[in-house]
Image (cartoon, rainbow, N blue to C red):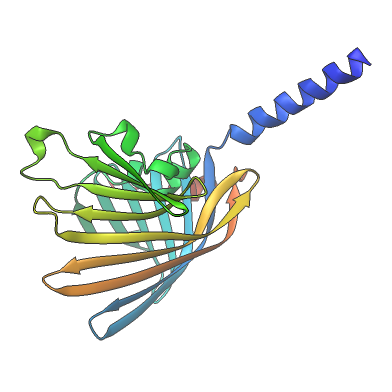
Length: 223
């Protein structure tokens, strides 16, 4: 009996270790956007590997393109031709793919960021966390309100330094892939000069730790 219990315990421990060893994720996505009275639709596949730290989007509609997000750069390519290169803030480590694989989506990685937790409030079945930037950056950055439901990330509200809403995000329809929690619908609301830009992203056919296909996960970008 002791030998059987020991074997079962070892098996459970091995399964738990394997369940936590996530390093790669891919799937299909569709993005529906509404900017004032303009509607758009984008479809394709995504690839992300923690070892390469590149978010790769392979678009199939409206045109065939490949977008590669690496460090603080966004590269847009058609075939082997680079036709746009954009520099911005570091975005890869705050992509949902990076956060999910590192088990940080529940707090959006804020716990390990420059932000400080200032307040925790419970409202019905939700817990709302208020994160604030350090004082030296309070003249540039605003607070972030984060809500959790059933220990999952439910919503984010980004404020400017004057507590005006810049952006809202809602994470819905979670699915479990081999122990990995993934929100298959994300609604994004961005506010620019009184205009509300709405974007809804849906994910499906999600694969975790896919073998092969390294060419997409480590898509080459121009020097």
